[in-house]
Image (cartoon, rainbow, N blue to C red; front, top):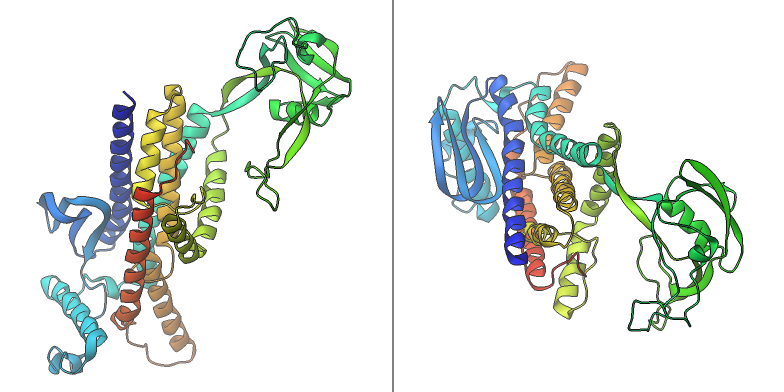
Length: 444
């Protein structure tokens, strides 16, 4: 049964990724058509075409590998310079990169010949080119906000409330292989204080508490000290005296990771323990929380993207040396699918699993937004940078009274684009291999 649930989660992630890509390309397609650009193809995926249909001048289709997509617009770049056209292909003695530049120009010129020369991308005003290229990433950002809204305001976040679910009657030693109390076991502090299931914690040691985490923090800092606890029972408030028992536990840092000393030994700390378990409920947030959470995720992913080459290198080293990977490090689509499978197969209520999947898919769309905004070709951010540079050149020429310059020829950046593509393929390969050999697991 778990295997079936795992496969279902994996398939759902593939479908979710395909939908995210399809919406990304629609974000390019709609404004391109609105501004009159000739669009020859709208494709989701790469590789062999599984299905396609032509509607008007555009062929719509689905390809076999759902790891990307594209639309083909007429005249993404200005036509080849006349001198280059007269010189033929320009490959003789041109070298590898010169050949790549000419091939890019030739492919672009084919799109110019296939349609009306007035319906080309490079002739559009700068703001329209930016809108077209920005449309794709913004669709991913919008989808992420919608998914976070469903998660936060529709389902709600599972949160520990201040209502007591159960009370331990005794303190059983951690090394004891039993769950029942004996006459020799000391009474648990909560039971001794008279706390009962259903009680609501109102204040602890004089401090009003709204979450169980707030109450727990005060209790843990009060080991061995009698403290007043205000509870609400049957609509009336009562004040009880609670004396937390001092117990040792592993110390954790702000990220919840176990702290170790210079010798690799686990650092322990003494905290207060009373023996109560809290009720858990889904607390719904207002709708405006979704954009806030999305913005926070954008910042976190942007910081990761900035360090991506280093993080990928560390991931590769961890995989080769057999070390455990950084759980906050980068993932490939394979890794995201693996985690989606684990979420689906987890021993948890169905609502928890749905929430986990929505959170994962929303985070994936945030990553698509941030990654595509990197100002390097062939990413959308690279095309936006080229359009803005073209606008700056034209504005400067107008300001200085000079003739309008020729459109920026982005095919000259093909060598740099080639380097970026190779780097992306290499990093993707490292992450995919690592996700297969040394995956990040929610189960540890």
